[in-house]
Image 1 (cartoon, rainbow, N blue to C red):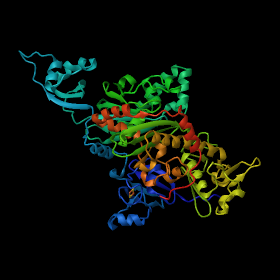
Image 2 (image 1 turned 90 degrees about the horizontal axis):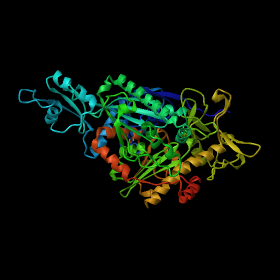
Image 3 (image 1 turned 30 degrees about the horizontal axis):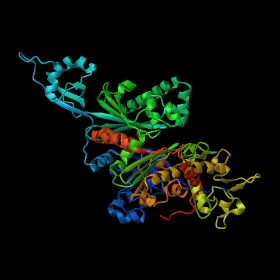
Image 4 (image 1 turned 60 degrees about the vertical axis):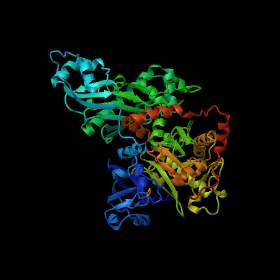
Length: 623
Ligand code: FES
């Protein structure tokens, strides 16, 4: 028997020429997320807000009834569709307009407007014309410039050495590049319109760099790479342990990351045509271990109880001190940290999600090997980190793998059998995190996994389960059971991909960590899940999760899916925001300082919550 495999289509998204393979019938919104584009979805994909418009340039993507309700005939004729409603039924080329993109400079501006802020980076340029030295006016060069700027200056030696020549080259006219009172440079023309900065999201798996125009807030280029520290270990603990074993590993890891950041800087310069001497400021957000290793500060204390970070306030240094090749005096801002493993990326996410404003009751969940959870309620901000383990990245899953070509990323059930989707135009090789969640959620719905997580034997399967699905339950001689997702012929390599009992146990452990962590924060704040206005999923994995399925297995709380939103790469967005607004940077510092770090691992109540959270929810909400 063959697993039912729907036809797959290739969807190419502009901008960025991002191409993905998806099952027939996949909503455009989901396909875009798979391609790394997060779209606006204020109504939670309900088809009512009209904010997720895209244009289908080529291919068949039929308009749904909601598309017809919300869009004019002429828009429909021009290929406009609601991404949350239209489904891919052909190879397609789809254009995503700037205003539909969630993670865009437009969004940053909106965030800034929300707080009545204009773009006001810490770096400022000012064109000045100074009186020429003359008889009776033999002021020193620095004081002459200070008077023209009407402020005192701290001038680094590298600038001071060039100052006499620079001032005289253009007859005491030019542009001062300022960072507060620090003179970063003096340029001999009016260059006040030219100022760039780079925001880095330093993840344990991937690094993303974005070049921003500091005048307009516009994103000029974006580049990403794998974190080279992966060769030391996928998870943070193994990297910390390797530094504990061999102290010189800290410097090796620091150098490898800074070399990769330089590669990204090279790529950003090449893509945009911007010159590196015009990059005057950088911001970097990562978890505590990543930030400390980048700064060359040992993360050893993070590896042992009570998991102490080395710093809480943001660090400002020269990018060149860290080996980065931009303007030699460019300052680099490393985000403030909350405590323990909850680092700058979480602070950046809180800022991006506007949680610091306290206007809404929100929960932010960043699911990774470490799950970070932040709760904003009743004027308080509480954060916790839980060791969710590597199950969502495919580790410790028998046939687990990362979300790469060959990974089953989606499992659904029809009236007769299961359907699945494989990443890339290739055969199934294994199961990635989203496939694991989908598979478990569907089997729970069918009653083939009970609430304790046990896979039922074929003879125990409810009568309502279609015969073809029942036949996929494989009972072994020792009575353990697993579920066959593919058939030999589908995989192309003669093996099958199964969901094993032990995979479900790993999933329960990972899910329980996040679920218990969320409950603990709500308890601490004396709040109830029903009061929460919005749950935001951050991080690369969060963008791909199917909300109903994540809720079915208890990874996400039992709330209406319309309250659950994807917010894309929140760490990257937060880093961009603080680069554009000095005011928001100050708020980031205050936010980190006032966020209550709830230490879970040593709390006996957490152990109880964790044990309870190992049980899958009995029922499922309809909405
Ligand atoms: S119509 Fe609101 S998200 Fe699509």
